[in-house]
Length: 304
Image 1 (cartoon, rainbow, N blue to C red):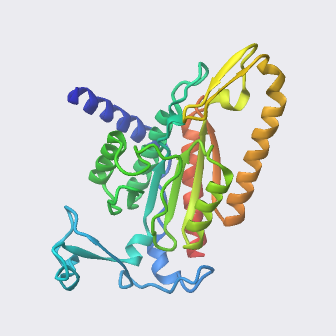
Image 2 (cartoon, rainbow, N blue to C red; image 1 turned 45 degrees about the vertical axis):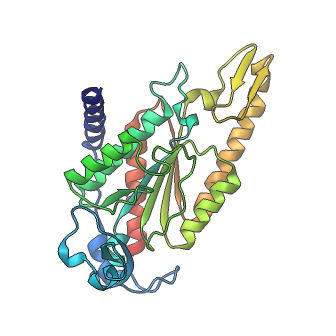
């Protein structure tokens, strides 16, 4: 069983890296941030080359001895390292929805929403790492890292369902403190109540975090291609609904779906975030390219 899981994980990671391969490496603008980021719209102070303190965190394997803050560590039985805002601000935090609704796959979908989200998250991580970026999974407590070893650890965490929201069944990520000008990528079907989505986006935006939303949906969720009497079952304890002639509801359903999409897009753009829609029956390269361009554009906003 362990060998099978390892083989499956390796195959997914290989597909993700192959998906990222044709695209140009992300042009990391981090070296310019040191000279150009000043007091901005979020009131973030100018930072130097790693001298601005951000937070203390627990020591992790791979941390170097000079990073340890012995004074802070002496206050308890735990070892702490000192993180600088500069290093964290260059990083990209990734998250994908792991709630039961992501397991849905219609006859017209080549993969479940969860499988596509995993592939896109790892492909994006591979692209970022190849460009020299530091990446981390939001919710795992792991610090951002770069390099192939970082990608391997990230892939293992995704496949193992590590971290709150990475495998814990959450529809939205938990709100965690991130440094100003960091970037957060949220991948999921984004079917949570709009007020919850709005609260999440506004809380991160208020901290100066640039965000990117990628909505992954199944073609049946967008087209409602069913006919006749259909029984719908909610995957997250919403209950069931039997419709006698489902085609009679199609126009109203599509109008409601479009209205929700418009409201979500308007919200994201008003806050300064980006949003992309992706159907599982479409090539994943399209979604990856859109995320690549969005992240590049966000770095450009910081350095311009």
